[in-house]
Structures are given as structure tokens and as C-alpha cells.
Length: 319
Image (tube, rainbow, N blue to C red; front, side):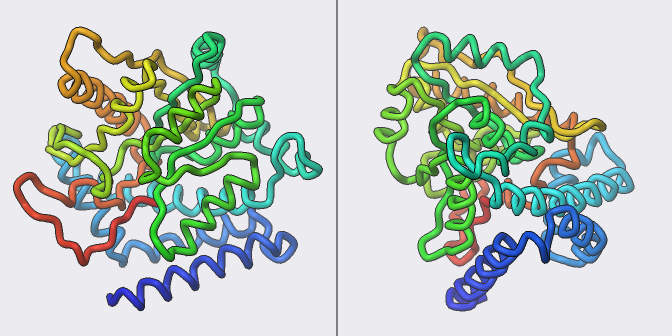
């Protein structure tokens, strides 16, 4: 696909998203979710399905059967349909302290807080901010919105493509419920300023991001280009990384917080960053094994291989 065709596709996708966002009566979230769930089996004929199955075989092939991997792939499709509907609902919500605040009341009902939220409260009570890390698992945007409705302020670090209207739509969605997006390439200083104000910064750290610093580290036993920026930021800020997830359970979403991953002070800088990043990868592996149908297996997680130059014509898929 040519660059011009890709740009046109993104523009059309963004226009469709905005049209659905502005037409709540014509396309209520439940209706959109039901319709997408109904047609989601068609995605099994797409390149995303092929990538999902290839990634599942690469990561879990030794511990699953082909039938089990196909079942997980079906779950991935259904979950993607659910996410899209929920993001449309988020885009129609209101931020705390604004006239539209009541539009976001559904977020409180949709996401229950696990008692482990006390870990986050303990960290914030120190007055130094918090560096939250999560994965493309469950609903990471609902996680962000739920914390905002708890009264937390701050920003998330998000991927932005030049001239990509759809990534702009995601940033607009977050702005709607009261959270600012910092571009991945904005530099560490902007993130550190947010933390110095005692606020929260959220990072998605489970996928490949060739545009920023990374190292090949094991992920499900396979070398994967892994971003080291979260650990580097934590070391610069003198903060631990705080793993948080928002996963779908039988009775709805639950927000869970884990004990912080502290940066080891007895190691040289690079070794400390790699050691922390490796531990974070293991946390993500555990989460994904617990809820395999809720992770973004369709993403090109193992695309770049050690010692092989990446193909510059292939689209970076991080959304």
C-alpha cells in the first residue's frame, strides 16, 4: 500500500470515528458493540488474524494446541469489537469538574476498584507523583478514565503519527474525559515536569516502538524489541514503576494495582534499566497468560529481529 493510500485510509477512518462520536442517538455504544461482535468473525480472513495466530504459535505454541490458539484468536476479535464500542462511549463522556461530568458516570459503574488500589494511594501520598505502566490488555483507556474520575490528574504518553487523523482522535478522546496526551518523542523533560507536580503519568510499555530507544529482551522466551524508556524515566525521576491493569472479568472490568518495581541502585545505569525492563516483561507475560483473549496479539510484537534491519516501508502498528 502506498503512503498516499495509507494516509487516505487513516483520514477516512478518523472521519468515521468522529461521525459515530457525534451521533450517539443513531449509533449508541451498545448497538455498535453488538454489531461489531456480530461481524467480528469476518476478521478471521484478514492479515490481523494471520498475525494473531502466528504470534500465538510463536509465544504459546509449546503450551497450547491449534484449537486453543484459534479459540484465543476468536476472543481477541470479540474483545476488539467491545473496545471500539467502549472508546466511542468514552469519546462522548465528560471530564470531572466540567458541565458534562455526569456523562462519565458510567465509567465508575463499568470499572470496579480492587482493594489493591491502596498501593497507588500509598505511592501518591508520598507527594512525588506516580509512573504507571500498563499493557494493551483489557481496556487501558478505561483504566486511565477511571483514575481520572478518582481525582487523579496527569497525562499519558501516546504514539502519534505525522498527519494521522486517527491517532489525533484518540488524543481528543482522552481530552474529553480530562487527560492530556504527551507524544512519545516529546522528550523526558515534559514527563518529568508532570511527575514533579505530584501527578500521574501513564505508559503503555508492552509493544515494539522502533522510534524510541529499545533493547532485545525475552518476551515469552523470544527476543523482542522492548522499549526501555519507562525504566529510564523511573530512574531519572527517582520513582518505581507501578504496574496497573484494567481487565474484563465475569462481572465487569476490575482495576488492579501491583507492588512497585523499584530500580536497583546497586547496578550501573544500563544494567539497572535492563533488569527492571526484564521484570516488567515478566509481569506482562503473567497478565497475558491470565487473560490471553484480551491482549493485542494482532500487533507486530516480534516484527524486528536481532541483527536484521527493519523494513522502512512497513507501517508501525502501535495503536
